[in-house]
Amino acid sequence: QVQLVESGGGLVQAGGSLRLSCAASRNIFSIATQGWYRQAPGKQREFVASIISNGKTNYVDSVKGRFTISRDSATNTVYLQMNSLKPEDTGVYYCNSAEERTGRVYWGQGTQVTVSS
Image (cartoon, rainbow, N blue to C red; front, top):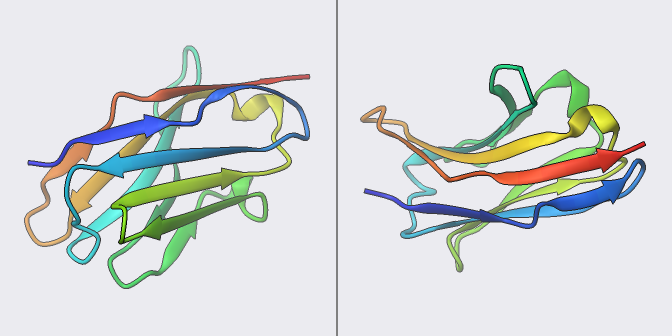
């Protein structure tokens, strides 16, 4: 079992930056893909970014060049650095961990990001 706790959300003006953090209860980076998803009001949850066990990253097209996912094994924390934020980035951001061998998936409780125009 893994517990994930997100933090770092808030209200920011368009063009601003935020850094989200996701603290895991234990280090599973070597066996799991870490991801960030978001859900805007009235919309389905969508993939934003991921980093797999070997360090390879992947992003949805709409955030490429603006968002960066990274991880710190010393603190069991995954980050999402978000720059040049746009109003359409508004939503609840969820941290996700998916064990690559077992397929077991864990979710955090979410953190609200609001970008004003």
